[in-house]
Length: 99
Image 1 (cartoon, rainbow, N blue to C red):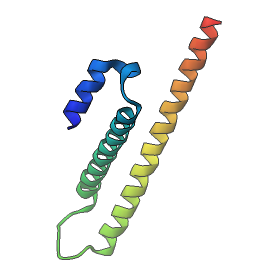
Image 2 (tube, one colour; image 1 turned 90 degrees about the horizontal axis):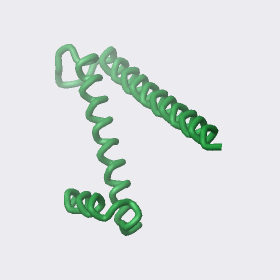
Image 3 (cartoon, rainbow, N blue to C red; image 1 turned 180 degrees about the vertical axis):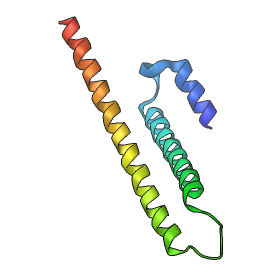
Image 4 (tube, rainbow, N blue to C red; image 1 turned 135 degrees about the vertical axis):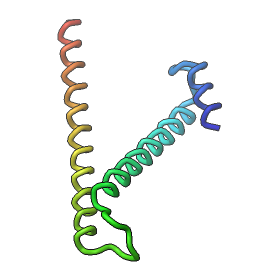
């Protein structure tokens, strides 16, 4: 379904696409990005915090996971904010050139 929707989107162009279809694609894309972030975070924190897997987490590993996840979220948020600022600066600059 996703490849069909995506090809309809590409064939129809942004203006011609059904708004409901556009929204569906946006939501599915956001879900996919979120899943990728969770996967990256899990892989990174697992490598960093798990020395030897056992039947349960020790307190050091648990603390490490909590800190790792919090830093990953902080870093991701920082990057998103920075990208937004950069994008706003670029559009403000291009608007000032067209005036």
